[in-house]
Length: 310
Image (tube, rainbow, N blue to C red; front, side, top):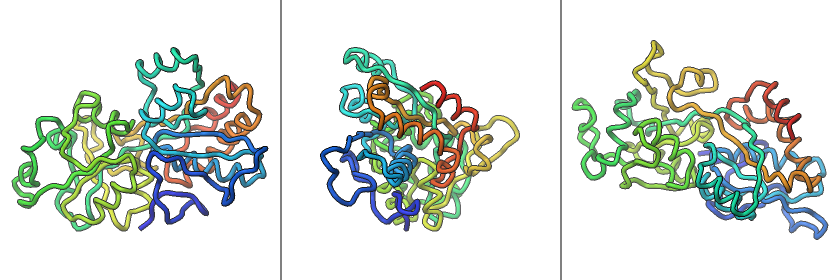
């Protein structure tokens, strides 16, 4: 089973939860090296980690650390001035804007890719391979807690077996987006599920339990297709029917396709030549690297516009 990391794009290590993991340098950085601290979304992590390793491989005089504490956790650090880049799988909230403003943190928003939140089951599950948005709402809404606990409660033809649920924690932008689009209210969710900001934990949980279901970013599914089955989703609108997420179907994968972002501290961007060089490298190489780590690249013109606006 592959868990996300980068070493020729993949390596067999887990994400270090909320603890920042130094990327690309085996030894401690020299005193002269600038530290570029990044944190936030587990969904955006694989892209930014890949960019960091490739950038430092060019001989850049910087040590880049990439941590994972979820989009919300990342913004808390970013708005406190603890990081200079925040990975985000959703736009910044008003309360987070206010926190940044209170601390004098101005930022530049850069869309970096498209992602599809992927609902997955165990490969042994041959019954729940297609679900409607209404099915997902019935399973994940707060009223389902302690009441919708067995598969046959969703469909009488499905087994009378207990459902094991896995999903992001409440600091996750993926959690915010999923609950908003599926349940109809951001943050509204049953709480009786295994939650983690580390998507590798969710991957392993579903892969080990034939009656499990979970959701996370598409990249983690694509790298573990031998151990997971993606569920086709039908939003009940249009003629697409059940759509399984992939780079080729993302335009039809409603309502769970979304853009993902990095937020950059503007003052640091203007004062640090290494940070500016890294962000420029990120945008100049996104069209190539983003698809390699399992996401859908934006149009080249959008990267060029973001680069010109720095």
